[in-house]
Length: 384
Image (cartoon, rainbow, N blue to C red; front, side, top):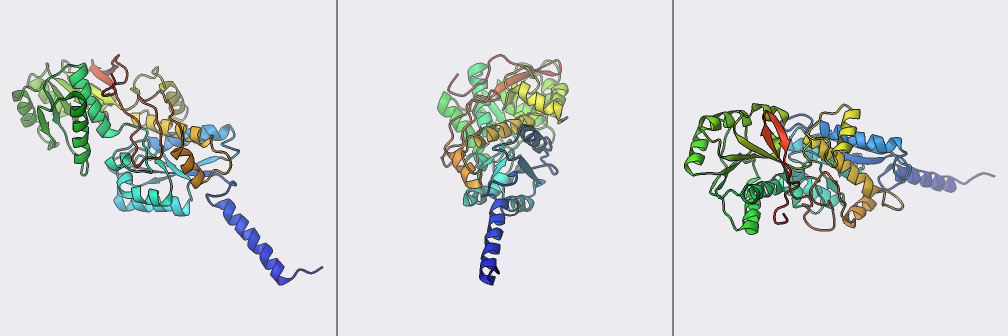
């Protein structure tokens, strides 16, 4: 029996529609595509982050994937270039049809693309949240405390653990970060009732002597500092500031910086995750296994990458039915808090208009050119 042209056209149309559905983010066939925007090149380079996220996904894929589907990471390098970052987000959402963004580590992504993510109904869980917008957007929830919650923890550690009365800040401020720093200081003041003795956010990369002379004259007992390590601490020793507690930000927590700090100075660093230099700490064994097996550079940022990927997979496995952008977003908006041993507080996305779920910091101190993990555990302001 011959088919009519009309029936043939209908069958063809249904077949095309079925193929289109199965290849988009709303179908169950093919891989689960997950996006990420990272600084692989440029001023803020974190190539180890997408490598670590992919390593976790590869591990899951070898075990059969999620609901029988493989997870495919599509990482875009924005090189800290605003135009490239916005283009990367659009490519991931429109061309790649990703269901979520996981493990991003761009310094400009959140501020540029927050509205895009909200309009698209997609969630982003950065491995490294830097910009204030990472923590004040309805569809973004990083897995790190970020520089501002870390400042609050550093101030709290100086005044409440080290018992310093005159706490000072000498910082280099990135464009757009001033408000976040002010909010972090206010949070510390609200908790403790204390004020900074000196606040200077104009520290440059030149001669640190004028700043240190000023700090010494002001009687600073503890100093928060976030710029270049070597010259600052060489001059601090010259100035005879061995009785001052210096607390550096997480970006200074590297083996090279520990070696550059002269003996005799009291230098601490606040960390966002368990200190990566001690692989025996809770959560670090899992991270070190992934990193070692895949020959990835060991950094604190790669800790955030493994954590973001682990949490994503855990929530993904709770989804019943199709894994789509819509079902993934719904799952994260309605999830319960997850305890992850690498950080100080449970992580949750949730339905709010802003997300800053991780608080607190662990502290390390330089001894003989190496970082020593201090025994207090995570310092969560107002809670210990």
